[in-house]
Image (cartoon, rainbow, N blue to C red; front, side, top):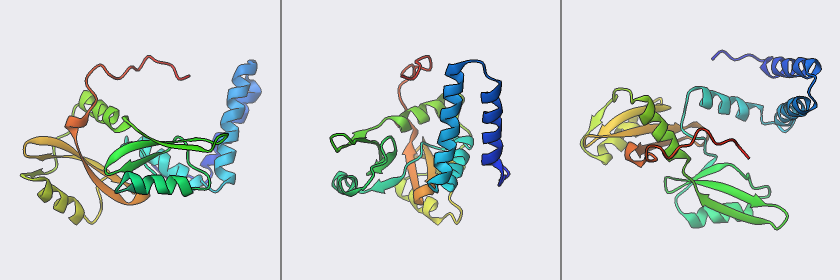
Length: 197
């Protein structure tokens, strides 16, 4: 994807044109919200983070995480001391996805076990896996290979002891990870027909 320094403004112009052409007040409200979201991203200095997120989505990368912790205690300490908890974001705790939740009215902060990685892996299986780029007898050999790569692969498939694994690079936190495909959500557990609330 070629970087366009005017991308933000082109999108705002398109949304503004659609807003002017729309005769539906409901559609205008949605378009205004989208324009407001882009302005918020820009005015809070998050344009580069947003670009990285878009690149990640376009590359069909694993779900984005904003931090990684070795223990739940260290993750809870981070969340407890965070001045503005990133509610809705995801973090890794000992290699497991967790959702960050914050109820500001009561200043309640939660780390909930998440299943987004399992759904992502299920989607990979449903689409058909690419050929593995490398094969290893043990997880230790695979880990050494991943760590030795000068340019971390965003997402490739390898096999360890005959089982497929995803090698992922969480670029935002500079973390290389290996996930067994056996963690995938069971077939039929993803309901694509449910509309968001």
